[in-house]
Image (cartoon, rainbow, N blue to C red; front, side, top):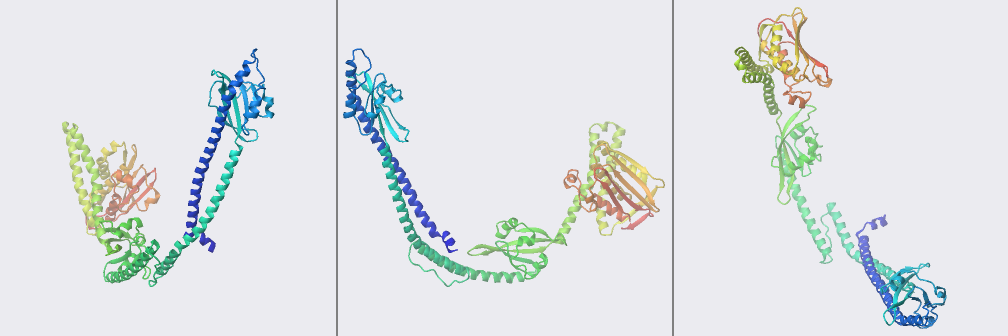
Length: 613
C-alpha cells in the first residue's frame, strides 16, 4: 500500500518531469548532432572522392587519346598500357576504379580481381551520362552484402576537349557508417548516465518541495476536524513559505466565519420560531436548516426530520428551478405551488427572501409559506364562470353570424326570407340572454337557492324546436337528425329554458365531435310511470372507456387539444348534470370509441309551479 501511495505522490511526478525534460533535451540535441555529423561526414567523403575522380579524369584523358592514336586501324585496345597507372599510381584506398573508353568498353581496372571486366561494355546510367559529357554523376548504392557505396562517374577529355572515355569510381562507405554507429553508442551511454544523475537530483529537489506541502496537508486535516489551534511552521519566504502564511490566515478567517455563522443561525431560528406562517430556512444548496411548527404542518414533515432535507423535494420543485430563488438571482421571488395533490390539495404562496452576509453575500434563503387555498378556489370559480359563458354563447353566436352573413349576401332582398332570418336571429339573441341567465342560475343551484320554474311542455315539440335551431349547423356538416317518439310521451312539467339548455348542449357536442355525414337521434320515452326519459344519440367519434367515469366533471376534457380547437371547455356536461339534478332527475352516458355516444336523462313529471332546488 505504501508503494501505491508513492506512485500517486507529487514527489514521483516531479522526478518523472525532471527525467522527461532531460530525456527530451538529450534526444533533441542528439538528433540534431547526429544528423549534422552524418551530413558533414558524407559531404566530406563525397567531396574527396569527387576531387580524386576529377584528378583521374584530367590525368587519364590524354593517356586514353595517346593509346587510341597509336592504333592506326582504330580498333579497340585492351588498355594494358593503362593498367600500371591505375594500379600503381591512381588506386585510392579501397575505391574501385574503372577506365572506360568512348565506346563504353572497360580498358583498365584498379584491382586484380576486376580484370575480368576489361573488354566488357558498361551499360550503367552514370557511365552513359559521363560519356555524354555530363560531369555531375554520383549516387549511393547498396551491394549484395548490404554495404553502402558511393559511385561517381566523370568524363575524360583529350587536349582538344573531345570526350575520349570516362572514369568510374566506386568507394565503400562502410567505415563511415561504423564511425556513426560508434558515435551513437557513445551518445546513448551518455544519455543514460545523465538520466540516472537527473533522477537522483529529482529525488533530492522533490523532497525539499514536498515536505512543506505534507506539513500543510497535515494541518489542513486538523482544521477540517475542527482544530484551529495548530499553525503551519514557516521555514522560509519562498512560495512554499507564502503558502504556509496564507493557510494560517485562512484558518483564522475560517474560525471567525464559523463563529459568525453560528450567531446568524441562532438569530434565524429565533425569527422563524415566532412567525405565524410556515417558514423554512435553507442554505444556498437548498438544504433545510430550520423549520417552524406551521411549516411542518403544511409540508407534513415530522419534528426532527426536517433538517437536512432538500426544500425542492418538500415543495415538489426541480432543484434547477428552485436554485435562482434561493440565491436571490430572480426579481420575482414569489411562486404558487400545490402541495399534496394526491390527498387534500393545499395551495400555498411561497415568498423567498435571501439571507445576506456582510462578507459572503447570499448565504441561504427564507421561504415563507402562506395558505391561499380558499383564495385560489374563488379565483378558479371566477375562471370557470368566464369559460362557461364562452362555451355556452358560442353556438347561438355562430347561428346569428351565419344568418346575418346570409342577409348581407343578398337574402335581405327577399322579404319573406329576410323576415325569417331576422326572426331566427332575434330568437337566438333572446336565447343568449336566457343562457346568461341560466349560467347565473347555475351558480344559485350550487348554493341551493335557485328556483325551478316548471311549466307544462310538449316534449316532441321541444325536440323539434331543438332540431330547427341546429338546422344550419346540421346542413353544413351534412348531418341528418331524426326524432323518435314512443307511445305515451306527451307533456311534462319542466323548466323549459333550462332543459332547452341541456338539449342544446348535448346536440352541440354531438355535432362538434361527429364527422360529416353522421346521424343524430332525439328520442323521448316513458321508462316508468311519472318519469320521462330524453336521449341524444349520435354516430360520432365516441369517448374512451377510461374517461367515462369523469366525463361529467367540470372542466374535464377527453382530448384537451381537440376540445380547444373545437371550442369546448369541459363545462357543458357538468352544467347539464346540475340542471337535471335540480329537476330531481338523473343523467347518464354510454359511449364507444368510433361507434358513437348516447346521453340520456330522466325528468320526473311534476306539477306546475316553483320549486327551490
